[in-house]
Image 1 (cartoon, rainbow, N blue to C red):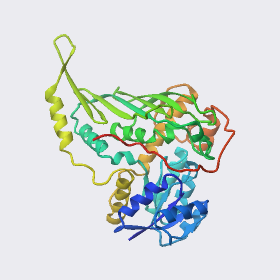
Image 2 (image 1 turned 180 degrees about the horizontal axis):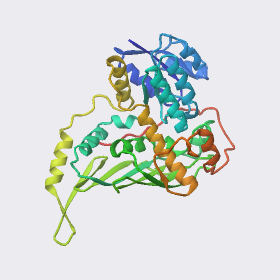
Image 3 (image 1 turned 30 degrees about the vertical axis):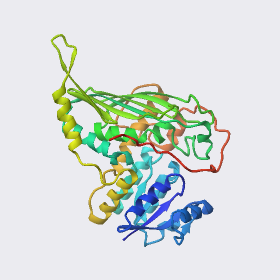
Image 4 (image 1 turned 45 degrees about the vertical axis):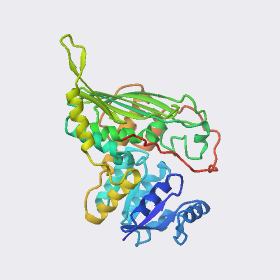
Length: 386
């Protein structure tokens, strides 16, 4: 039985608690930790964890030798310090997105995990949805041919008060705006399916959230070594929150939510519908089995079995770093108003958190904050269709 602790009992913690409870034959949540003990006790009561000890300081989790796995659900600025100390104390860690506040912190986490032979998995729950897995396999089979253009629409909507929460809307504590904290999942999917680009050109703005230093809208153009291009729009100003990933290949176009269209050329170069190719790809897509477990449940299942069986995790610290590197390149390009080449190296002005704070764009001054909201109910998207 794998003993689990959860540090940070805020809005995302129920996704972890509920996922662990699915696998009560493999694990048990034995410890909760939060600086707000009252909130943590209420959450423990609501999830039937009445007898679970609740710590205020994460160091108490580190010192408990019975704990083997820890979910870190705290604000992004705290991820690296907590993760490093947990790894040093012999625990495996699951880190909520984003992995850390800087590439320097990611490298420290990964180095510590390697030194202590421990697992780091960064939450990227969208990978575990059935449509995502199916599209990944279609791409891997080259059924649409070479990918020429990719499009990511990470559209969300958040009201002004969203950034009133004490740690949100600041570069120091949240690490960025919608590009980092909302589009991170779609950007992770893009780099997982497409690989890393060689160049990034981006702009960003704050269009509707005056109590936030960070961006609420960004648009980035990515160029790959083979000449293909991707475009990524990250937003918290889009009503309806319509989200999609589109891959335009030589032979066909596919997307999540699932849609396919294939064309062949007529004698004058105009398109004709390629029914045969569409049917071939459609048949393969629908022949693929559904995921047994999806979203957080799927990723936590993956990590638990990696601990139990010694297998590798789908989303490790290297993958978490690559996603943050791509986001950091977007911030660098938008802030410096120039095209950025990848990879970003340790001497870069956007490599460390301190340097990012000194060189990024501050759109507004945060002048008001609350310690907590009356409700911590959230929506996480992910309605990708079948």
